[in-house]
Image (cartoon, rainbow, N blue to C red):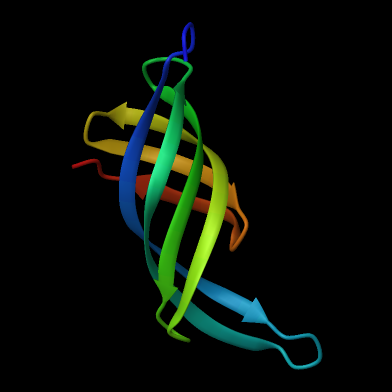
Length: 101
């Protein structure tokens, strides 16, 4: 888009976390999901980006294919490391790190 500092990238990663579920009986389990998708980045400064992403992954616990949309922010510490926070339609709130390759 003219006048907007944006870019598109492909990414792959792993969602991993402890999940609480159930209404009358509380069930706990570890969730593990390799995922890949596209990310539309908006570069606010050389270090700060906000983005929208769409991903698809395989939930290993149940062998289910899942998709998710997300919005987030990424702070680049340097070219090889970044801290990110995002909200998505599957896990609600995600905190993580990125190691670009």
